Image 1 (spheres, rainbow, N blue to C red):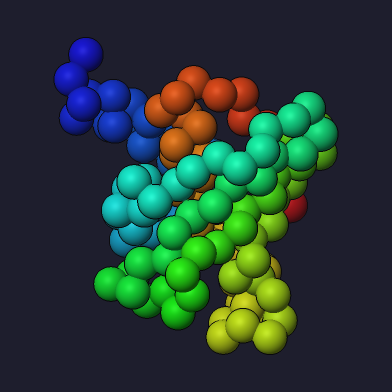
Image 2 (cartoon, rainbow, N blue to C red):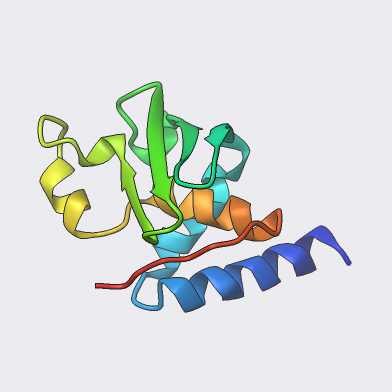
Length: 116
């Protein structure tokens, strides 16, 4: 299977998880893929680092994405209220989180998300 085919399949699965997101949001997730690195993967918690990308408007060198697989929840350090647009991002899903889920899909890791 080619890289483009694998990415297309992975994007289709990501779109099932986040059906209300824009084309731009998915494009930004793809652009962040090379910047996603796992820090810790456990049964109750996963931590990932997503390197900041100034071309995508990031102001920080890295962002920490924490996933709670059993609860199907996630949080990103960009949601912190002292960060620009943090409160807005908290109500949405940032592309740092989207990139981590896309990475997990491509690498065939289990994903559980509770929708609001």
